[in-house]
Length: 120
Image 1 (spheres, rainbow, N blue to C red):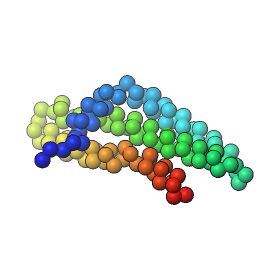
Image 2: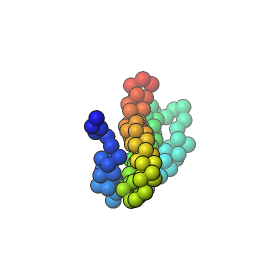
Image 3: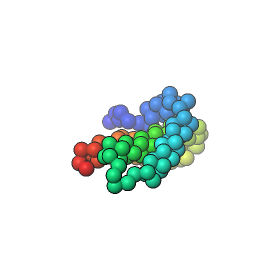
């Protein structure tokens, strides 16, 4: 059976995006700080557009954090470096678990924001 979302594919994507990892991490931190500052300013009389903007900033911070962590996790695959077969099999199992987790987590902040936008 041929799988489309493999650790090797994620590794190639992470290597391509590796130059952005620290920038994304910095933007994530900036967005979190900005959200904290804006959340202190929100009161009952704040227009709903500004409240949604603050929520968007929070979800943008989460999305950039997830993408940065994806790059850090998949930039180097330990199974490619390991010579010992049992350890290589162990590392490949961990890499497949990470691939499954990131397949779910990568689109999650965006999907949750869209869900909140339409439901709330």
